[in-house]
Amino acid sequence: MVWSNCHRNARVEVIVLIPERSQIEEEEDSDSKATLLQDFRQAWHEAMTGQTIPIDQLWKVFFIQTIRETMPIHYWENINTFAFKDFHPQRTIAIMTTGSIEQHGPHLPVGVDAMIVRGVLHGILKRVPDDITAIALPVLPIGKAIEHENFDGTLSLSTETVMALWREIAASVFRTPVRKLLMLNSHGGQSDVARIVARDLRAHHKALVVPVNWWTYKAKTLYQDTEYTHGLHGGAEETALMLHLQPDLVNHREIKNFVPVSLEQAQQYPMLYGSGVKQAWMAEDLHPQGATGDATIATLEDGQKICEEAVESMIALLQDMVAYQI
Image (cartoon, rainbow, N blue to C red):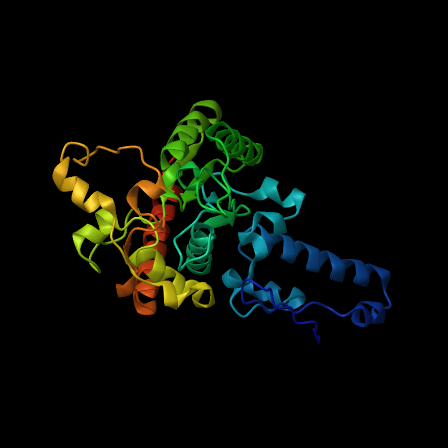
């Protein structure tokens, strides 16, 4: 048999060979046509739902260079409504990615958080093991960013709106057989909100819900300790990630060391900056330009390393989630 019509998915490398209409029409026997089409539909359905396809059956339907990497199954919006019923509750994990649109100083765009979480998500989906069905929900780029609202370009929702949005999306997910949800967050200002929502979801849906920031497990070895404790916004890490993920959006002329007021205040008011204490702040409280940290030490190579560490840790987390019995 000769197969044609190569397709390349814009997000993931994919080569799928499907039968031409002329080939189907060449089948004189109507039963043969029906069988050919049924074989195609069945194997495509099995691939889309992560089922194993016997190797001796692949030639009947399509050849995929690397089966797992070609599956548009990784994106919720690409899945057919009738395919959801076949997802295994133990092996399937939905990923809700939450970002923010907020100022990041004079050198970075307002979409940093959303761009970073998309980059980490893309890395996860490229590397997810074959025994895990990971499905990414559409990225939620706007969140709670009230601490940045006095800077132009920031888009912020209220705590109540964010909580309702996340809860209701998750409730829709749990109406399918999916019983595991990873809430992958990219904005520190809504981490507490994510934890509250996750607890509510656990109580109401008896599901495994794990809220986590992409940076939770990464090593803190590239920079000095003060950069990790005070360079929270538009500093070395976020600038490095943007040099890696979206270098064309970095304004190199505006890169500088944004020394935060908190460095001096931590010495003056040690109890306000002690372990576990999180004083409420607005971005302008820390620096008049809204950024904090030394962006001058950021490199593209650092960004690659940070992103890779984040992806590796999230893959390990997904493996634990699949193994966890619900």
